[in-house]
Length: 370
Ligand code: NDP
Ligand code: GDR
Image: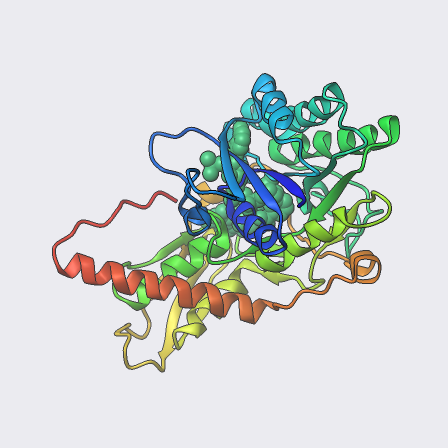
């Protein structure tokens, strides 16, 4: 039985990857952080009582900023494969916490690689590093491929740039099976609530149900190559199953504006939205509603721009060239953007229908900070 260790197992990708590896027969270990509230919502369905026999899913307390902790866990688990998905992954927040981001996302990767070296696992254990399309940053050329130069535009991206190169360096210096997956944005119903897609699908669902009035967003012109996390964790696994360790771009090759993602989300609940105005004065209005279940006023202003969501330096355009992963890994995404939006909207509408019932029965719903 193969043994995998996943950092960031409580995150979006960690949850999908753990599920995939368990289905493939792996024993899966995950590192979770101590928090004052439970933080395992996304993986609770995978939980196995540690008192049972033949448990294949185990969690360890830990943190990428703690090297002795990482060394001890890796020594105990002796994994065949490590997937380093743990990170402070929010680009905007990285401007507020740059030092912590560098520590967790940059040096955290070094700590894992060093742990493997110290423990003599450089030949036994393979490691996947969660690299990102944010490395491309300021547009140099499109579509972006494995050979496009990097120009990071946030403390997050700069930290990830260190992680990218230290992974390459340990591969070359010590012959380690260490690979970067340069993944473009990928989303799902499990996506963190403050990333733009989930922020939109949640808000649109609430507006359709009369639970929210409007939605404030930042840069509506930003273009992203959005895929589904379920497809992307499959690629992570494939990258570690190859003969040779290499780096791969994982993307759909299609790019869409934030504005169009908003339109597509509203259209899932039968509401058509048009945008008028420019820059910070741009607004989205309801022009029609074909769904009799939703009482939304025609002409209502549902989207406005709030500059507080702008980033000091922005990444304007991401569009990936997945030729290498398509041909070498045989990887092809099963989801396109309309399917992704449909799934995210269906999940959020269902969630807020339940929340509406609770609200109507007098229960207080949680505050949402975005
Ligand atoms: P999430 O933000 O959903 O999950 C991040 C995970 O990292 C969580 O489990 C979080 O724990 C954990 N974590 C945060 N800080 C630390 C730390 N100091 N030590 C240990 N664990 C930590 O991210 P995604 O699942 O979306 O992304 C997974 C990885 O892929 C990240 O590294 C991200 O930067 C990268 N990436 C993501 C892309 C995307 O579009 N989703 C695209 C390209 C790269 P907790 O739950 O306690 O917060
Ligand atoms: P990104 O994702 O920065 O690409 O990083 P995010 O969804 O946060 O932003 C995408 C684009 O939307 C614009 N935007 C807004 N973003 C947020 N979060 N909130 C808003 O209100 C808003 N309005 C407009 C942003 O300016 C940006 O251009 C994600 C993360 O998962 C990273 O960890 C990962 O490495 C990259 O994707 C690839």
